[in-house]
Length: 487
Image 1: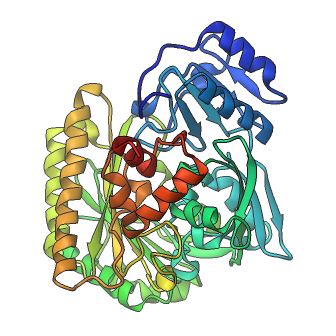
Image 2: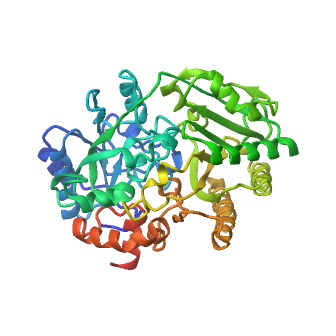
């Protein structure tokens, strides 16, 4: 098979015919098939590639068949769940794509408080199915995100202050390994694989089924959008409140805050998205210091819990060229760092005005439940008493690719450098790696495995040799590192 992202000629017709004839229930699309153009689309236009063939998978047996076929004929392989990766890892130039979108069933067991979720589901599928029973689990803050990608990379969400990460609520998976074997992994079955799946799962196979623990969830919560004019008072007030939340939250409170330039306003503003998993009166009392800063727009209200995971949808629509890059920030966050991020972002938007749909946000969740597990207890290695920041840029023209991706790296380096200085000076508790795999959409290289998994990397490399010795699943941080080092 070719290297990560390698472009290949389209698959020969006789091979396509051979593959199609071997399938039991799934559909195979080629560039001449009706529906092909729609199926190569991705969340980011810049991640769209012309596959040689697309398997619309609806059975593990057909996934096994295509895995054998891709290796026999040395074809590039990609797996698509929600299609949100801005690295292009869910697409293939000329190779095969396993598209899980036909597999979107959700089964709720209200008595056992579990959800059995097929691999092609979006978080909206899970949110709506669980809400019927007054239940929820930790889903994405953008509900058209795929369940698989978010879960296998860790999974932060509005409820993680109360219930931990998405992977902390994962009970088991069913997956198809590179060998074509269909297996299950949990805390009692294939425990080493389950350790690896929780944080580096994309490297080990195609997960066709997840079983999640659910939690009782009240129907009505309080949340919404606040926009503020950037002033010394709002900078200081928002940072002070964010630090207060991080210190005092019992898990019911959360905040996402940062910078956007919404079209109706036409200038840079500070965005704040508060969330309170409780009554409106208590919410307004707790978030009072934020509300009293005098927002330009106050869209906070009582809403159904599933609507909370729609709040960022408008800023995360499909289409446009995109990149995401993450960084960590130590607590307490300083006003100076927050102001510097805003100033750098504003200068970038002046330089690339067609990138006006971009945003930079800081996530503020209580760390207690997240840090109940140690960084060595599963592959995910980003647990610590600190926060995550995300640079999410969107632009229109290919000619702006280099400057936009360069700015994403530059801003992440600024925040990462500050985080490292804070770490060295002892201001970071419960140290993790300070990198969230799901936020890094700038591609993969030989150093990315160690950067994302730290002390867990050697064990992951060993398990990779056990479960995927040919590195079939290499369009990810771990697989790309192993490929680059030739091990």
